[in-house]
Amino acid sequence: MDTELKSFTEIEALNAKIASLESRNAVLHQLLYACSEGIFVADDTLKLTRINPAFTQITGYAESDLPSLSLADLYPDLVESHGTCQDDGSVDLRDFEGEMLSTRPDGLGRPVHLRLTKFCLPSGTSLHLGHLWDISEIRQKEALIEFNANHDSLTGLVNRNVLLSLLAEEIVRNPKADTKIGVVIVDLDNFKRINDEISYSTGDRILYEVSQRLVKTVRSADILGRTGGDEFAVILPGIKQAEDIVDFSRRVLNCLKVPFIIEGRTVHLAASIGISMYPDNGSDPLKLIGKADLALVESKTETKNTFSFYSDRNSPEPGDRRHLEEALRRALETESLGVHYQPIVDIASGLMVGSEALARWHDVELGDISPAQFIPLAEETGLIDELGAWVFKTACRQTGVWNRKGLAHGRVSINCSTLQFIQDGFVEKIESTIRNAGIVPEFIGIEITESCIVENVERSVDILGRLKALGIRISVDDFGTGYSSLAYLKRFPIDILKIDQSFVRDTDMHPSDRNIISAIIAMAHGMGIRVIAEGVETRDQLEFLKSEGCDYVQGFLFSRAIPSDDLARYIAAMT
Ligand code: C2E
Ligand code: MG
Ligand code: MG
Image (cartoon, rainbow, N blue to C red; front, side, top):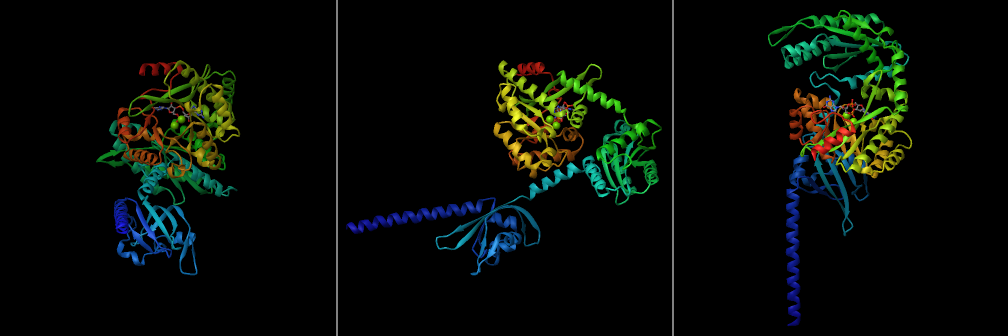
């Protein structure tokens, strides 16, 4: 009786175990079936033995393909690089995680993120568990961002940044200056009138037509770009004599003289041209463009509809620059620069969450000088270290003052130039400035540009890591104007992306800028990065950014950069 009872209890327990195993299997099956990510199991010969519906959807291979489907069919490169064939016919495949191209039965490749893990069974054999998800949409968005960052959306021509780097490449390719390189800037005369008097859409149509005419005028080796609203630039490599550029310029002026027929309306147009040349006018791409710009000013002020070569008399007095540099040196010595603060606003609540510290310079003699002018000057003359350190110290001290007054000012975000960032002891300097101001690093943020990171990868990983460990928030400034590779930025500890104001400004007019903004926001969020839109000036821009889920905004719609006392009043009025 006793034994019977015992075996009965055992049977009960066994039944319960079987039932629980069955239900666990059923749950696992359900999970596998419902999972939106592809899952597969492969045996030690790499044959696939189990897949789920998401796998079929992503790779195009179904259950019916299974008996003969091998991982080597799907990921030949991976098997080649990570696998070792054994004597018994099995393949030893090392674990892998990363991006792969899935080869589909239709021959098309689809980018996936693949995670492959090897399991050893008690029987001694091993199997591979794979987990993959489709990243083609992410790649498409990245490609869109990258294309738009490098191309003008209206004409499809390359933009100023690309043009500059292509010019640099041409110069490197021609170190002995065996031939000349022409830099030609074409600017339409009185174009603003078309926008103002007819319409923006007609203006856009004409700009597109102009680009098409220019495409037909340049040779295949020439590089044509749109560098501004109504400004185009052409790089002419392999020029033997200046007369060739004269011929080209005449052809351009003539081709633009032919009237444009847009929506039944005849529009007459003319252009002015400024020219500089490598090596005659230097070998720095930025300066060559600048000199072509100066020559353009001469064409415009002369008769218009003409071309001018750069000559020394176009250049600003060398004394002017030296004068400015001296004035900046003095301003630093006497601490007569200033720092203003521009509120950064949370888009959902409308509340200020922090501010950006922006350097200001008012000279008694020269008047207000814009940072866009004196920051590059400080960078060129080496004064940026001192200037940057001064702004940093001033902003930290101000934060301390606000703290003591109990103001809810949030984080203060400070711009940092590449030259400061790559300097030895940068992190230590920042840390001691913060401590000396009697504040904690959580009140401070740093803004650096993407190019600063991309051009100093090793250092950036180290420096950004250390800044972040201190509690400082890291923003990437002016995003969209440089490399614009979010995938690349993934390896750096970035908290915030600031979309450059040029995109925000054009959201009213250009749908493509809206697409870029949507894509940047979606991708940044996918990577856990928050987004600030810069230069928000209108309600329409704000509404659009809100609808796209942008986190924060900054711009004249809320406030300009204002003195510290005014910001204190701004905060007090808000709370
Ligand atoms: P940024 O860091 O991108 O700063 C934003 C700029 O946009 C500021 O110009 C700001 O006044 C302007 N801005 C803000 N909202 C609007 C708007 O709604 N519409 C328009 N049109 N503009 C708006 P700002 O102060 O002239 O500074 C220009 C650049 O100079 C800054 O660009 C930054 O790159 C640099 N800069 C300024 N202060 C410093 C500094 O202390 N250190 C360094 N390294 N760079 C600085
Ligand atoms: Mg900034
Ligand atoms: Mg910016």
